[in-house]
Length: 96
Image (cartoon, rainbow, N blue to C red; front, side, top):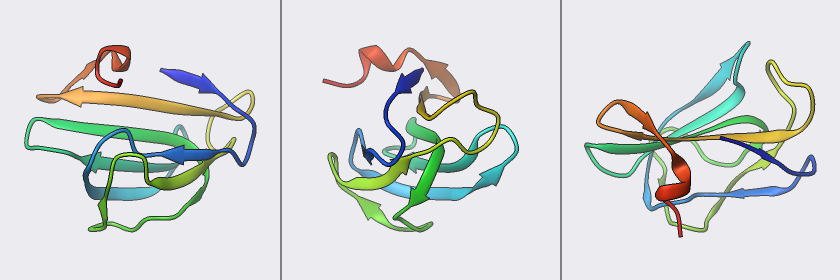
């Protein structure tokens, strides 16, 4: 899911969890992956600045990054994914 937002807007963790990966690639730009359980994780892509490190514990609502335009994009936005048992699921049904 791509969420339009102004560059520099805060990105908050959708769930409690542990940061399992941060990095950069040409498609997602700066990104974060957070594991909330053995079955469930979230992914945040195209970020400008990342405020967490691999191994960090995060709480739901904690600021983890800012919206950016890194990677393959046409403008600033957050690419958000919810992954359940290794499959991407519609994130609309996972957050309240």
